[in-house]
Image (cartoon, rainbow, N blue to C red):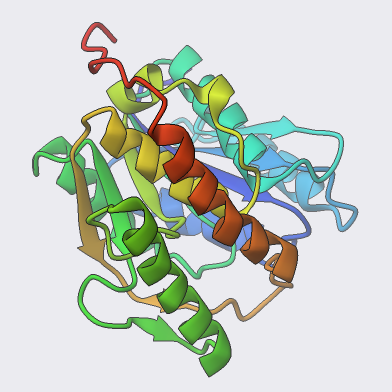
Length: 256
């Protein structure tokens, strides 16, 4: 496999309208990013598109061995998709591991900024933040903007996290973070997964930096957000805080 330090993990379920465009957009960036698609059995043929791109790129020396895919049997949850991706990234030696959606709500052009925040800016975790410099959300219904914004406020109040966008899903982790956190103990699968990862990173002593980004609502495909995912976040935050009172957080692992 071609050596690279940066891996972008993209979970997919029914993203045939977006997946090829997002992959090409990431590969057009300066520097070398690899992509790992975690495909949850999309019935719309998303996996077929990824396989076709793998065959295409295999014929190009500069593009070969940059696109990978893990296929799963069905919708197993966003959190489990990322945990599977994190483990794959650690096994394959990546130093900077990114979370990103397939639907262009996260702008690929912001990936280098998240990378620089960790590589040279002193952060262990960098977050593409919608709320660190106001409310930077485009084309969302007002109700959803308010729900997301006040959800982050609620999380800050309950957990004490000094993070404006606690539910953000556009994130870069240094390898050390994912090698240190007990990934098998991350319990949440949906919306609350993002909160739990940030909460755990802070509790283990890692430095978190928010990088302002503009979040644009998807134009193609269907949103995966629903009320049960939001409910998990509301009640999950209380459980996170409660459990933290009785849990010991070891020192950072600096050997990985």
